[in-house]
Amino acid sequence: MGAAAPILGLAGGLVSAYGQYQAGNYAAGQSERAAQVGRVQADQVDASYRDELNSTISNIRAIRASAGVGTNSPTQRAIEAKQEQTSNRDRKIEVGSKRMQANQDEADARFRRSSARMALIGGTATGLAKYFGS
Image 1 (cartoon, one colour):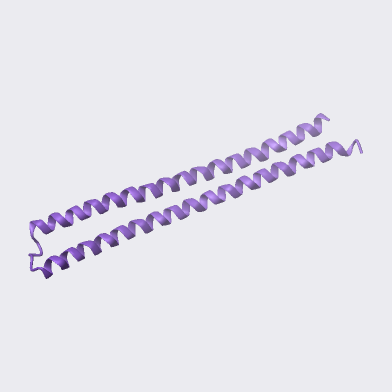
Image 2 (cartoon, one colour):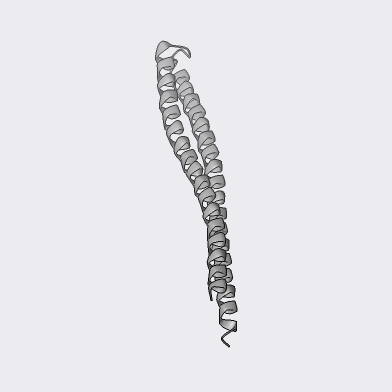
């Protein structure tokens, strides 16, 4: 039984290292998926703001036309420009936030993959050191 202990210790160390490696890779995969979802959401937000702006400007034009106001008056241009400015500012902030989070998720994935490899290497080295040290 005394000879089996070092072998069991090595096997346990290798299994533990591999488990940590798998857990790290799984977490990295989750981060990669979160980054992909974040980029899709950023694109959806961008499209939504653009559609909403177009709808708002169309409504402004329709309301002003129904009131008999000129379609190309300085007031109308100013109102539309203000709507566009506000929409673009809000769109850029929200899209930028989503993309920054996606970039962070990608960085997390790289870190987790690297940590997983180090856990595998470190755990294997520790298990071998214990085996040969006994």
